[in-house]
Image (tube, rainbow, N blue to C red; front, side, top):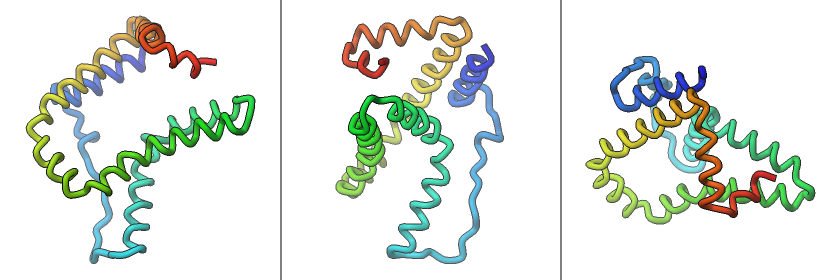
Length: 154
């Protein structure tokens, strides 16, 4: 119940209905100079990893746990390879098509309100589903709609 309430409140925050100032803060360190080259890339990658750890950490932990329970090392490696590939793919594609990517991102800003409200609606709906104990229906619906997902439940 508590998790559902938190999700609903966070969804309302995303929509801008319930502003939570602490979630809108950006923390950063002042920099005196820009470092270019391999060292600069390393520092940017390090800071990016540090910032993303809270987001991807739980997912990575779940995949590592799942990989550890597989019958063979190859199955576990396969799961981790898919996870790593899925994490890397957007960055590799963005790097390959950087100029086009920049133009698409710049032109897509007009869609941000739709994305924001859609995301907020999904978060609130998930929270309501968790609060009412009906969210599990989504899992069963997904298993019926995409039978291949059943392989991940074993």
